[in-house]
Image (cartoon, rainbow, N blue to C red; front, side):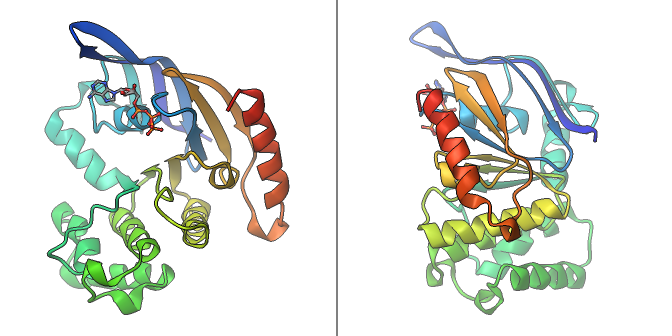
Length: 254
Ligand SMILES: Nc1ncnc2c1ncn2[C@@H]1O[C@H](COP(=O)(O)OP(=O)(O)OP(=O)(O)O)[C@@H](O)[C@H]1O
């Protein structure tokens, strides 16, 4: 399996009170194509900063990031935006859907911006995605007329519209109840089974136990990683994986 992402010696600093503060320190990380990786660690350890830097949403201070053969530090802002629009999908804790657009219009917006497909094709794809996410009946609703879980499923549909190679998700279940969170994880696992790589930040061991590999960050570094293998709901191994991960996290002082 090849690497979709290769991160070498990544550092990110901020200047706070005239002093340089290291938020990411010499990160070395390879992500295989089709992997489902979660990132855990204490608050402030650098989880969000890591995904913002490796997705090119933020510029690293030093190091190297190769995404599908593209050296991100050499790419212009314009090309980086194009790369993000066409190859990456983003899902956040706050869904960031536009208030003046209905749910379907929010989902199709990025596909119109990519200017690759005809209107009819875009709409048919959005309908198919909403059907899979079980939100088709909400297509014409305002975003105020849907639950948090339904809105998060809509934001995943939005992230999938341009067939991204990788999805970056920053605490996507953080604002949801456990039923809605499980629905989101079922959706992510299905997307991952279909070949999309996923990197997900979470504080929740139940959520991370449904991913393939867990990275544990401390103080701007990846301190350890745990390989759990692909999650298969049918094997009903959820409790075992959760117990294994919790034990590992407790050993790390979580
Ligand atoms: N623009 C900024 N300027 C200065 N420091 C920053 C800036 N953005 C983030 N930081 C600092 O970088 C560190 C890592 O932040 P980050 O949000 O990546 O952590 P996190 O692990 O995702 O935290 P949480 O779990 O609370 O979301 C924190 O100490 C934060 O205060």
